[in-house]
Image (tube, rainbow, N blue to C red; front, side, top):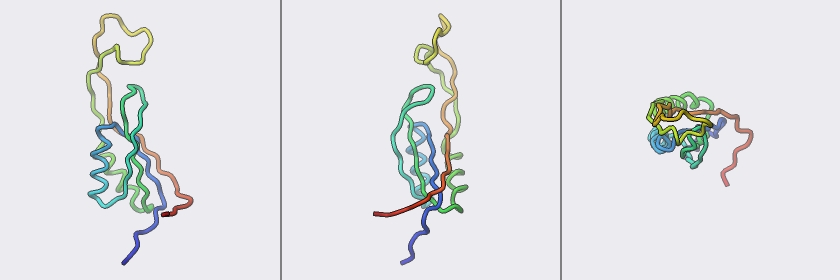
Length: 115
């Protein structure tokens, strides 16, 4: 039995909560390791997901390509009252906001142990 190569890089992707599950499924289908952690924050303070994938350096671009294909930017109408803005315009009921996409980090793995 051949052992999988040790991960050299950790790809961390912060994505919308709805994109997180689709991203995990895409990574697993591609045979790449992935862990999803629920998180929150950002401008709209909505649920998000932090997806971790420890891979050999040669697989980083493949992971990033799956993130780009799965976590697309889109716009939606949001009630102005729900936005964390002081002094929002009186009478404005909703506004268009950009959501989705991903914030990614690629980190070197200094040490890896499977315990």
